[in-house]
Length: 104
Image (cartoon, rainbow, N blue to C red; front, side, top):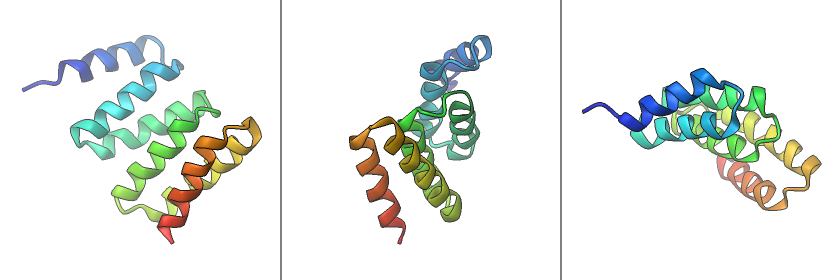
């Protein structure tokens, strides 16, 4: 059965590729549907257009971790820690630190 929500989000991203809400929604919809490989480039594009979007680092890193791409997950968590330190987002920063520590 086709995922109507996925198609709507793709259309929204095509119209506004820099829109953080749409891009994050598309990435998370891929995660929700189990298509982790498709989510990874969406998180990358999200962070390219919106480098301070803290949740993109956390969920993007988790997605990479689930795919077994541990060094990439570590790098995105570390970048997210830098960004959240600079922006003062202590809550997401602590989540990113915890996620990084869980990688070992």
